[in-house]
Length: 351
Image 1 (cartoon, rainbow, N blue to C red):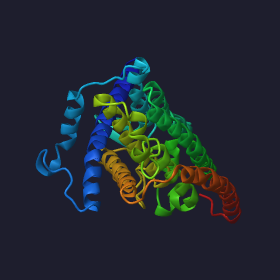
Image 2 (image 1 turned 120 degrees about the horizontal axis):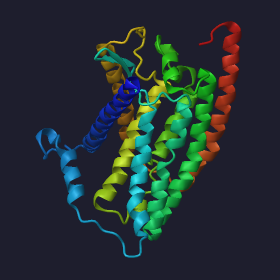
Image 3 (image 1 turned 90 degrees about the vertical axis):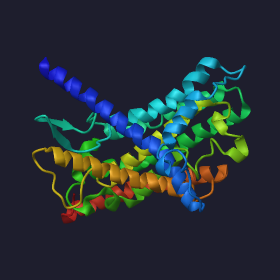
Image 4 (image 1 turned 90 degrees about the horizontal axis):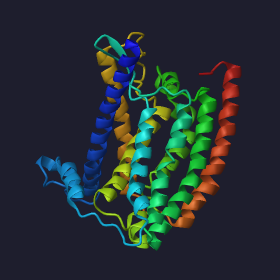
C-alpha cells in the first residue's frame, strides 16, 4: 500500500511539474512568435511590458481575464461555452505519453520523466491529437454564424485529409522500429546520430511534419481562420478568455507536436554518441530533460519561421497537397521502408 501511495504521489507531482513547464513554454511562445515576426518585418516587437517585453504574456493573460464576455443571442450557449475547452484539453492530453527525459534520481527514488509509458503510445498520440478539431467544429456550429460554421467545416475536412497522411507516416515508423511504445522508440535511437529515425525514414519525417502543420492549423494551413475570407473563422464570435483558450490550445498543440517530432524522428532526449547510463542520476535526468526541450524549441521556431515566410494556400491547393501528394507518398514510403528493412536484414545492416 505505501508503494502505491508513493507511486500516485510521484505521478501527481510529475504531472503538476510538467503542466507548469508546458504552460510557461506556451505562454512565452506567444512572445517569441511576436519577436520573430518583428524580426522578419524589421520592427522591434513587444517591448513595453517589462524589460525587453518579458512580462507581455502576463499582460495578455490579464487582458483576456478583464475583457467582457460576449455570447451571441442566437448561439447554443452551453456548446458555445464548452467548445474552447475541447481544443485546450485535447492538446493537454498529448502531454501524458510524451517522454520528456530519461530517468532522474530524486530522494533516492528513480523517477521516469514520462507520465505514462503507454505500450501503444504512438497510437495514443495519433488518436488524441485529432480530438482538438471537435472544439473547432462545435464552436463554429454553436456560434450560429455562417463564417464560424464555414471555418469549422474547413477544419474537419482538413483534419481528415492530413490525419490519413500522418497515419501512413506512423505505419512506416512502426515497421522501422517494431514497437508502438514511445519510450522504446527513443531508446532505439540512442548511441550514434545515424540511429535517429530522420535518417532511416526521411520521407516519413517530411510527411509527418507537413501533416503536423496542417493539424495545428498554422499558416500556410490556417484555412479554418482565413481572416481575409471568413472574418476570423470559427472564433469570429468569441472574445475574452474563451478566445484566449482557443489561442492557448493552438500554441499548446504546436508545442507538443514539436516535442512529438523530436521524439519520433530526432532521438527525443538522446544525445548523439553518449550512451544511456544503467544507473539513473539527478544530473543525467536533468540533462536529458534540457536536451528534449532544446530540440522541441527548435521545431517550434521552424513553425514560426514558416508562418511568417510562406503565404496561405488556397483551399483547392490544400486538398490537392493532402490527397494527391502526401497520401500517395505515404503509401510509397511504407513499401520503401519495408523493402529497405528487408534488404538491410539480409546484408546484416539492421538496426
